Length: 307
Image 1 (cartoon, rainbow, N blue to C red):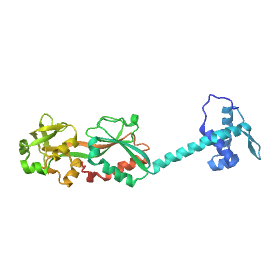
Image 2: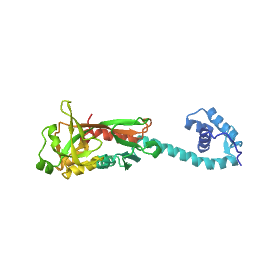
Image 3: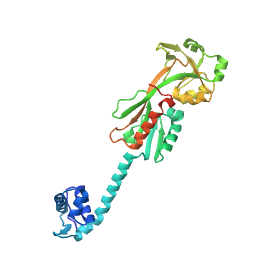
Image 4: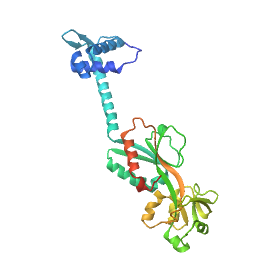
């Protein structure tokens, strides 16, 4: 029976012992580990001292395991092999995108484009599986075990790494049916005569600030029967003919392509917050996270993001 010992086990000593046994001697182990034979001998001696038992009987010509050494080897060899396997798997994760990527994003982004983007991403990287949580709350990435987040608007002070993807310009949109019935405004002042579907985070107290093509700024009084705090709701209500609404460019693109929305006064916009990719640390960034970051950067123009 091995003596109990309060001193912590040194994995270098244990793995060296396993290598000596597997290689059949100190000289062969030293060559495989590319270490001096004296270092191998010292590690084995320290391990035996820690355990309080002799593991190897050795002479100048040969070496053999003691009974205690054999029992010890039978147990630790499996553990050392498992550690090497785990280390190799971790290194492979750094070399090639693979594994589970946990992503959180606002609901609006999920509805606007995230499904399409992630289908394309997983086709490019078939060994990556993506688990998405769409939510309006700010997720604690580290505590809740998420790899990456997409966040719109002003970022809170944080120790997280944030990579800006672009700006989220917000435009004025209406359905063709609404404009056919009420007319298309030609100037910002003409917006006062129209019904609005209001996003409460964009229009405060009925005041709509707009920026023109040359940087000029105006504030228009607007009103409407519908208001909410979700861009997807605004988009759907505008498509249904509820009035003019402000929607991020990336959210309206598909509806415009399908001719269910028309941009109104396209040279006048409401500057939204930026869209950022956020992850816990840039140090030893997993290949799966790096691949997703780079993939998103490729799609900036296509998604309607700009600086």
